[in-house]
Image (cartoon, rainbow, N blue to C red; front, side, top):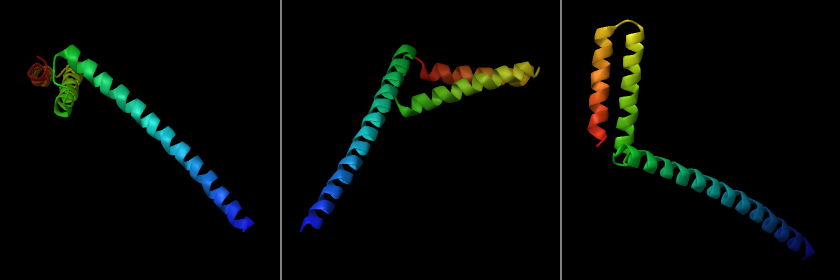
Length: 97
């Protein structure tokens, strides 16, 4: 009878440790999710764009196109640099109000 009490206590202790770890990880994920949401909300409000996933992806693609234009200009490829620059600016002007 006393052996059952020991195993019951051990199970409760292990369950409490697991619950503490899971609640701590849940708090951490919630903290990062909330911080990321606030960041995206502030970014979209400042730029005047929607806070949707498609708008954020279009912003990233537009910035990558501008980066490609800068790299093309540094390689002395003026024609390709102008094309990347115009496409990047067109995309960014499309999402930013």
